[in-house]
Image (cartoon, rainbow, N blue to C red):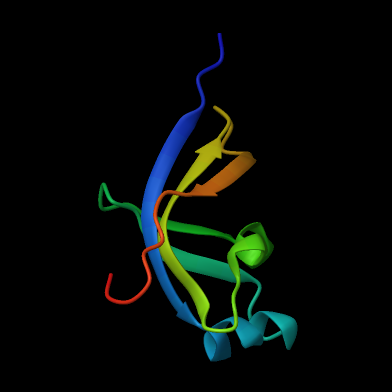
Length: 82
């Protein structure tokens, strides 16, 4: 039986904050999930959503039962206040 879990969270990262990933200073993103949990995941998982302004929006991450990353999708444009 496929029992994947889905975690929703908001991100508001400026381009300067994400630049730390390219500089090798940061490797993980930490965020608070909508349900209150603190989550951390490799920054490369959101690279596809990076714009000149940074990474902003409401996202949903899919994980396996063993907490292995499957996918991530953006739920809305989420630009601006979060």
